[in-house]
Length: 155
Image (cartoon, rainbow, N blue to C red; front, side, top):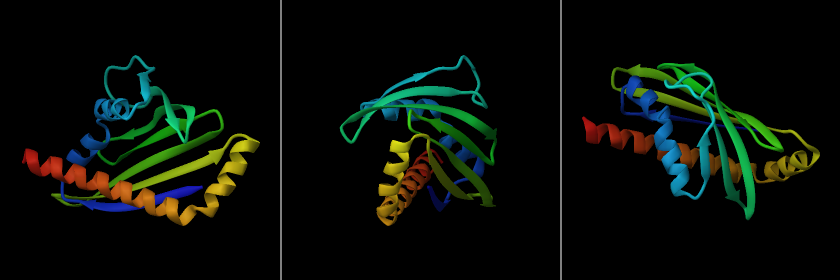
């Protein structure tokens, strides 16, 4: 199952890349939302191999997720590998400079089942695909607006 969204951001590509690779900011955000997240690598600089283990509640059940940076291509994008007990996937963020102060961000989320139960869950998700796609696009648009606002405040 795949979800995609594109947003244009009024900020330079370098700034947008810095925002989407603000790993400490994402960690703090997850902690504020009740997730237990721990960094599992020993790398000092961001790049391929940076990884986390997260435990969180979703739909009333305790879930675990391992996330790792699979590709790191400044300032063009980043790919995260996602692995849980029943689902694996990738989140790909590609950046394209439209002009000196404008960037197009394309975000793709690809999920694949790893078990029979996950396959059945994916089938039920396909029934709600239009609603899930809409929610995904809204969340990416909200994030793009946040990036734009933080850039404008710092400029």
